[in-house]
Image 1 (tube, rainbow, N blue to C red):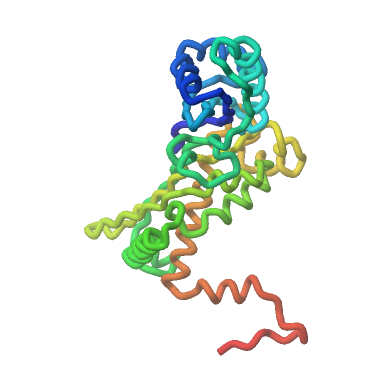
Image 2: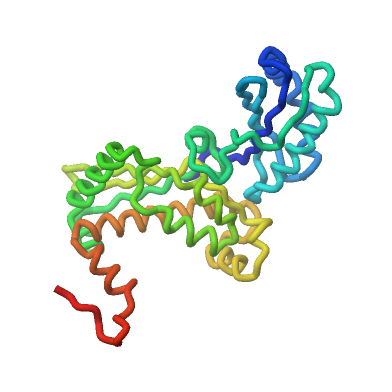
Length: 294
């Protein structure tokens, strides 16, 4: 399931004092239509959603949030915002005492883990969920549904104690593989790194319901690395190579991540986690003999 989507750029405007910065921010609602016209003329796919200002000292940081069609939109929003900011400097600098602007003031949280990307979608907001019976858990995962739930609950408590960013087991593994395979900006994995795994257990039916929420998954099915032949092939395999398939791609990646979360948790429960790494990830010793086992 997908929710909001967006892509942002966070320029900062420099003023002589904070009062001028606040005066400019108060005028932004009246300027939004004009700024949208200037920004949107750079791409037929781009639409300005909103402007979110923050005054910090003598700077007005303005988060420009857009929708970008089927593209992830990293470059698209940069070009559009540059054009809009240049228009502001040319036409409004004297009226609002603007000294200069900088295309990115670090408010967009690009390629960074931040609460900003949790509160406002940078990419596609997406949730994957499943419900597993006890019989399926025992047959496929090698553990009971209750035990699977308990280990996930235990992990949640440890995440809180450890102050971790989000609550997941290893969803970054899927993000890394899927982003590279489908031509996404690999460094933007960090934008999607916050995810929230929620286990719920029904003692009457013995079913465990699992949901994995990503507030920001910056993916696209056109532009950038999606143009390469191998990445196009991967998108075709996933049936995500056509128009309007960006949300479908985000949903598939979230689903794959939830599957890995479930599998990894089960391997911890049934004590195969270390064994699988030893068997599948390690080579034989240098003399050709298998590594010793206790």
